[in-house]
Image (cartoon, rainbow, N blue to C red; front, side, top):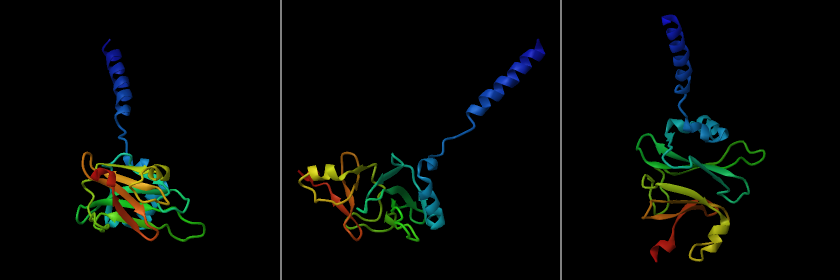
Length: 172
């Protein structure tokens, strides 16, 4: 009887030990080509990927070239300042992927270089922007960021660089 009990104990402990072994890794939620480019371009020397915002990345056409780009949240290692890295999809026959760093120690017009205050983000499509008469007309999708019950606005491509537009509907 003792031998049977020990055998059952060993079998069940092995079965349950396998369940708790794997911890979900959020980096697997970011597209592989972005992770590869982050490493190959040595961005990991100065920045770490942050998973404070959900979803972990945004995918849309941020620069109006009809290709889907990816934005991730990053933190500058030296200063601890938070921001975003936007990976633009590589054009045919281009040698490199253009990457834009917003915040994380790099200043964005009138809003600063640290986006620690941001606690939500999402993509606002062109159609949604055209419905809001108080905002400028954009030719591409924009990143809507903000702090609940406080400041919010849009990060958008102005044709040359990324800019910030505060949500004017908040001011009313």
